[in-house]
Image (cartoon, rainbow, N blue to C red):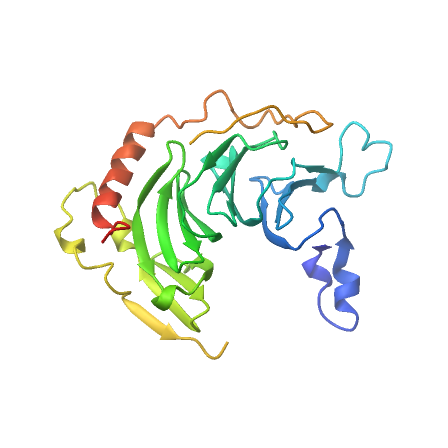
Length: 271
C-alpha cells in the first residue's frame, strides 16, 4: 500500500491516506527501497520475488501501461528475500536471504540475479549501507558483519548479541556516530562507529579491544558470481541516468585500501 502522509490523522485516516495498493506477492513484504529520484519503489518479499513499481505510472491509464508496465517482477528465487539495500550509487540492489546468501540485481534488469555472495552461516535479516561499496549485515546468529560488495569480501565482525539471538534491525543515529541493533534478547545495543571511520592511518593499536563489548548497552523496555538468462516475459527496463558500462567504481583501489584498514580493526569469525 502507498500512503500520502499529508492525509494522515483524524477519523478514517488510514483509509483516506491510502492512495494506491497492489497485490503481487504470495507472502509478506520484508523490505522497501526507492531509487535516487524517488520514482521507483522496490519491494522484497519472502516469496522470493523482487518487485519494481514505477510510481509515475500509478495513476496512468491501462492503455499507457502496455509499453511501460506499472509493476515488474523478478524471476522467483529459491530462497526468501528478507532485507534489501541499494549500493553502487543505485546501480546494484542487494537482498539478504534465508539461506545466508546476498542476492545482487543490476538496476533495470529485474529478471534473475546478476550475482550471488554466499558465506553467511545464517539468514540475513537486516542490511545497513555504510558506503556505496560496503554493508553491515545482521543475521539470525546474532552477529553484525561488515562486508564489501564487488569485489565480494567479508571484512570482519562489528559485534554480537548475547546467546546468538537474531538481529531484526540495524540503524544509524542522526550523525552516524553509532549504529543501533535490535534483537530478540530484549536489548538495544549501540556500536561506536569510530572503529570504521577512516583517518588515513593503518595504526590500529587503539582499536584492539573495541569490539569486545559495545560502548553502550541499553536495556529495552519489554518490548562469487552466478549468471544465466532470465525467462521472464518482458524486456529489461532502461534508465539512461544510470551508467552500467562498468560495475566497479572509479576509485576501486582507494576503496580497497579503506576497507583493508577497516578489516585490520575488526574481529574475524575465528576470534
